[in-house]
Image 1 (spheres, rainbow, N blue to C red):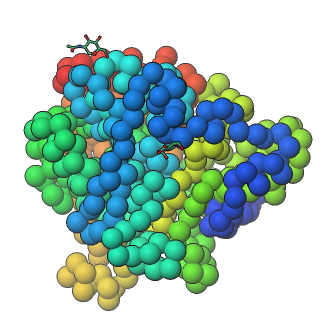
Image 2: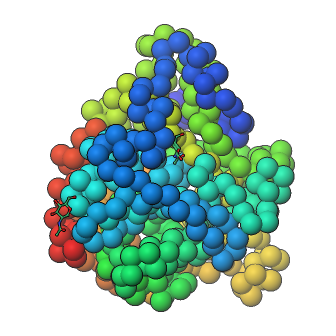
Image 3: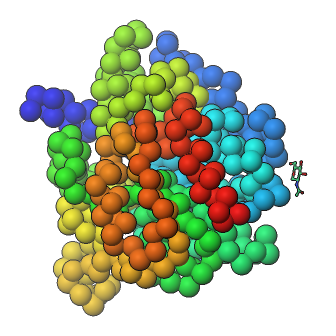
Length: 400
Ligand SMILES: *[C@@H]1O[C@H](CO)[C@@H](O)[C@H](O)[C@H]1NC(C)=O
Ligand SMILES: *[C@@H]1O[C@H](CO)[C@@H](O)[C@H](O)[C@H]1NC(C)=O
């Protein structure tokens, strides 16, 4: 109970700092043990170049007016789209150099495309709405990021490559978006050769105690945030840094305890995959921004025990859906080939919940439990090229 209370307080602090804007360099200079590594300072384009490829950058406009950045690392094999998770953007797919999925796929010759969802640092603009002054900009969750952002990006890649179908890999929220999109716009199933879901976020049954404590307090925290007018979370990369600065004070020991106490328990514990010094790179790139409503939607999935659309409350539900309860996403409409990979150490996308997804999807062609992999390890692990990439490459080969 004591432990839960501490975690809850840590979560609240993290949440509130996540909401504040802070200057990365100033923060870093105040944390004596934490300075950015070279790769922490290089941006996406520079990292891709450093690791032997070229990166192109495009702007895509969604049907509802958001301007998204799409990155491209050209290759001469099949095109593959990478969809990042919440709190991230395209950056984490390249920050371990040849040991990260984006670069490793390019090294194998794939033609790699990377989405950046609305609200992230690469896609924080709109044809009409001002993200700094108009709350309406932040009125989105996994639903809109699937229905509009993923759809627009898939169409853009198809247009650019002249292909009829592409491969896609999504991590965490990426699969949530994909299932929302293909269940509501089934024509998008026809545009995908294979969708590989890494640690997909859809079902949240039997969650660990820490998650439950935080998620049960979610409605209260989120209502508080709403009252305070906080719509945008994790702008810049100040959030965790500020937490570390505030709670973990100085010195490598307390810093280490704090990072392990706050980051690992939620995502899964695997210090071998996430060495402390990697933070010097990671914090140059993550977290990336998203909306309060994103968290609210996930919290509803957990509380409602359903993979359903956003719950607006009785009256608004009625006007929006014609129903008092928000409709479930109909997974029977997700007819594309889907592969599922679940991390054996993942505390957020639990193996049992991924199995449940497998039962509810009509066309799962592959299911695999990945050793030594937490929720974040799918993208960030130092050991991904040992435990994860061989599985991914052999699976993709069948579709190349
Ligand atoms: C990275 O920095 C270079 C040099 O400042 C710039 O030309 C490029 O557009 C930047 N790329 C991104 C993705 O911001
Ligand atoms: C693909 O590109 C690589 C270099 O990136 C080259 O060595 C190889 O010959 C190319 N393959 C084909 C089939 O064009």
